[in-house]
Length: 281
Image (cartoon, rainbow, N blue to C red):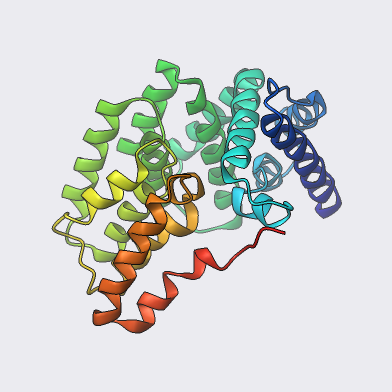
């Protein structure tokens, strides 16, 4: 299992680095079909452990790709990885849709149990859904809303919410976020997740969203968990918006750290961690 996963990750890194180079040279992006073939084989193999299939579908993250790059070209890395994800979603749509539907059907009929088998099934179901939403197809929106509204566990609900938050369906996204906040407003830990999901959204306008969320009644700079969820989620996970070429993300963080330093110097210093991860060589 590990060898197969490791080989898959090495291939994915190689393919993504090719795409990053194409983007930097101003060329049209073209995905190496070996990745599609490999993932198609895995998705279509129902004898494989669903957890392994989910892991194989998880492309190396932007932070990791940045760390292994000679120059931290955040925009090129984001463009390359998103292009690869969209190609996978488009070319493997039918297979991913079939796996999602089959797993969600079992979830609907089976009460939530914290077991390895259930975790594996939900992992595959959820990563399949995140790919499927890249198609922007109405049937995927319908499936996401069904999962969000009728699931019996927080993992599936948060995944559906995150998929909506990163989707092109603005009205449904706003409605789901509002309903979630209303339902869980008295549960601070769940509200932390609500802030995190939005902070990490790579849709354009990330900084404006974070600034707006700072005005939400449930947010306060005096609560370290809220700061970690919203500010840490933005600076640590939303690379393309935080590292915007105009420097707006850096200015925002600098001003915020000055303000935070008066309240909680320890939390203030931790917010600077995303600026210390890499250096250009």
